[in-house]
Length: 256
Image (cartoon, rainbow, N blue to C red; front, side, top):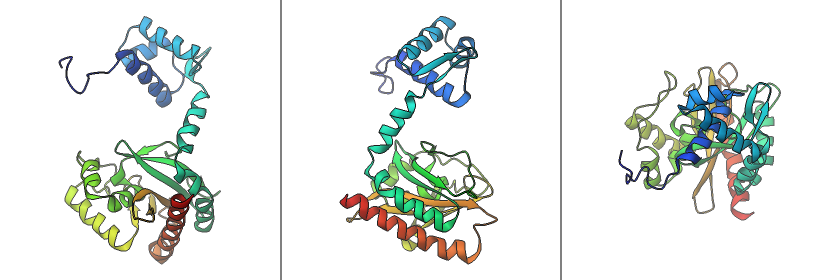
């Protein structure tokens, strides 16, 4: 790849290495210099220099076991989340919705082509999966993501679906035409289902959050195990509750 390639022009290798280390520590936990160097394909001295710099800046900590991320990232993450008006508008309504449904709920916005959870809450019986605040998901695999795709404008939808669709379970809609048909159905009825499309054994109901001029702001969903999310309650009652909560959040976000 040439140095004037648009994909690399302006990129700084050292910055990419530092953030590569940060992401690797996030995914794998405490690691020593040699482990980091091997994982990222850099020399031990390079890995050591980056880790020491990150430690001096307060972004990683060094223990007897090695290096790990520091709590400083909590402050950065909270700042990034709070800049969304949707976060502030959604908290109380989502808490009430989840209490009524008795499962787990999440608020999602789209960023860089993926869904990002900016708020999540669950009851005592709610099932915690691999998702948490800050988790990014493929839009076509979730009820929140499909709600977003169904109600965004055509150009945005085309951009978000320009890449191939990953298949996470046997129920994931990975065919573009089938997905577009599903999105049309979602637009007509106002809500989306996730029937074990991201995680086997889990279902969800999602709805878009719209401004007063019908601009898509994000989406919400409630999710739970298939053993409880079933029947008329799941197909009729939960969607009504989710849509009502989404409408209220949209009003609050628009006028707050």
